[in-house]
Length: 512
Image (cartoon, rainbow, N blue to C red; front, side, top):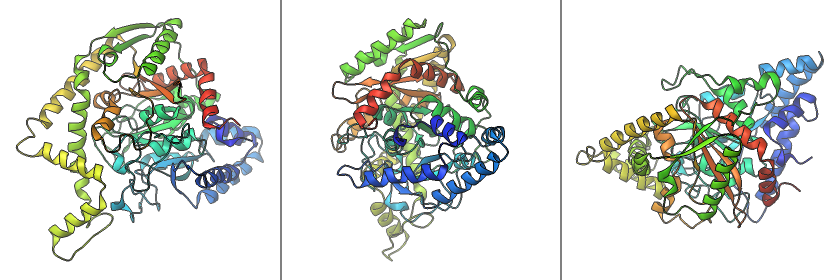
């Protein structure tokens, strides 16, 4: 059996039928990761496999075996109560898992062990899911290639000389590389959708507040959200149904309805939305962007034609404020990052470098040696923006622009159902190509940042390959709290384009 091509829903069906056990899944995925780590170009998506995963899987098998004694109906009832029972998943290295290291890809947290579970982890565990291991990431989620990790760069499973994207590149790599059925990432400005596009899988960023941020190490608090990566929309919809909802520990969380996602528990299938009558907006500003790859544009035009062929109406709209989105994003994100990272001072958290010469020296030495170059760059810029001389010109102006973006995007959704655009202006680039060019790296997020600023949901769907064999992603964005409907549109795309997943799996060597 080729475990590397299995989706979450396929794994779940096999567990229900008894065709496979959770212990066998953990054993097989461990073997896949271990063998890959011996290769000349390992993915390095996982930076740690949890030693207790096998024991937790065995406990899940015991629950299933006990229910099976009472017949198939009892097993189905058990899986309605615990819909992810026995299914292993990957966890980005900035999401807390009790008793496990949570280092955010940084030397400054190399000795930190989380004393509690993040809310999203707790809810997945309550649904029976098995935390399998930590995935690689750009240090403190700051980057678009996973090259800023203290563990070294992850690789793209489709073409290993290329980046898997970032900052959730490790999570994307292990899902696309067939090392786990689904994984959690985090988003501040596109850090789930961009890796999904580069690796040829589905990457979803929810409406701000749909998923609790409790237990997730902050980058930019007003922008951050936990996201999901899977081989198909149903792989995202089911964990979303489990994790969504208001959380006492997070005042920004919301009691939102994701019912079509939870309906999977009843009928075992995620229903696709009808495309007929759908009204689609395409921002003119993105079509006129310098640097938009011609192959990406060609595939985007084909995507538009497919929606039209299904009965959708597609119109180009003017949203002038989008020209300022990436500048606005980086002013706000870096300001919030500088503030959030001030707590890592050698006293409260993580590594401590004490020269014995006083607090100031301890603070400077700890942060100088603990943080990598990109994080220090962003802290310096963030503090500059927040300084008394420039906060009015930079930060306050950026907040004004953000309010305008939120207002204008809300106006678009009064007339249209979704916004359609490429996920990235280019396909994945070679490792090392942009690591010393921060401005080029920042522009990778050109089409994704407006989503986080507007706090709306968005999903990147795989749309094919370039002539060089690199995946192309198309981004579908919906209105506030229309998360389930958005994923149902992605499901319609998925069902109509089964050849895309096959092409990507073949190029990645997973369909053998």
